[in-house]
Image (cartoon, rainbow, N blue to C red; front, side, top):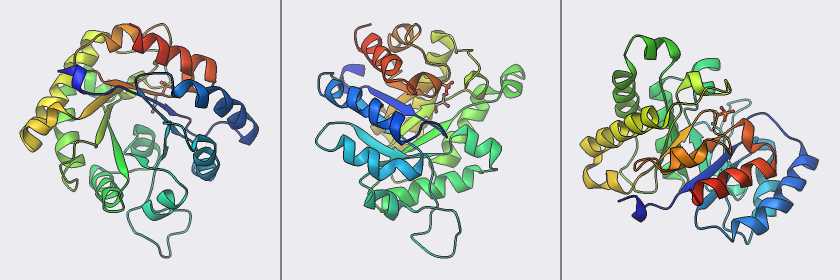
Length: 252
Ligand code: 13P
């Protein structure tokens, strides 16, 4: 089953790195990405999208934005549109990262609207879902994921290129990683929810794990049948550790 889904290793730089750091990173990752049987993606801060896309040109690296607004253009100070992301040479966009939901008040309705608008412009959305520590401790993880998936996909057209990332909020930037068993249970459940909505397309959808992924824990995560890759924050800021993650994931 998994063999039919190409793995994805994605770097979410969040609000980190400058143009000098990025140049150094790209010099390492561009030649490497062509040698590995997996999709490598980078989500830089929006101001560096064009530059990263230019440096990645001719390589198989996918480039995406960390956020967008659903309108094409207009008086929305500080926002960027799918059209602009595409114009920068990028092909992907994160929708509903937990930091957007929790620090910037994005609701599930906003997330699905963004993801639908991304599709309308030909971008591929990577939709992020995951429970908080409190929800987990209350035993509400699956309920939260059910709601997240149903709401987040409600404006999204069924398409096997759509990507989902399961990022338990308590595991992001904390050094705490979900056990492979917990991550597999949650991701298998997410796939079941997608199956209820989209039928057999669920078998083709890539679902990634994110939350304190490191070179030392990626192999056991990638050994799980439903985990199709990783969305990496902190450990993706240095080319060495990001490449080690990809290498250890692919060669598990
Ligand atoms: P960390 O890898 O730093 O925990 O971040 C995960 C994440 O939020 C990726 O989107």
